[in-house]
Length: 216
Image (tube, rainbow, N blue to C red):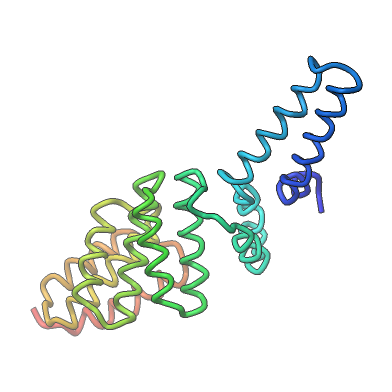
């Protein structure tokens, strides 16, 4: 465990130690010096509640350690006290883990909490609606899925792969409704995104075969 992790994981014990050090310095040396450990202790306690261990999450995600990232997320005991942008990221990550675990109801509830908190950027808001659309589609609620997906592309998504995914899902819903005109329009928009993700690119190719068989 590196020094940064120790500071993050043990903020409260370290803060208590600093407070005791402050009193020791105050009684044994001078109160003019004691304020320094007191101040650091206060900052560490504030960081514990407002930031939590979320500053470490990126390292786990980049290394592909999803189990470690999940354990880190689970260390947050009072998410409502997190600073707003961090809180929305927390709920988004929780939703991702719930989706992986096929707990769609929990994932939906967490995404809605993230949206209620307020996303730091529009692209994150768009991604949340994209995920809500995918969840609604899995549940068979195509009307709600369609509304969420349209909202996602209207707000904006972080990259062309996500944008292509949203348009493909919209096209698929239109096909189910036998709205072939809009199905083609959404498919062409998905194709124009020129997705670089292999999985999304393959979905575009498969959809192209189906679209080619649609009359008109």
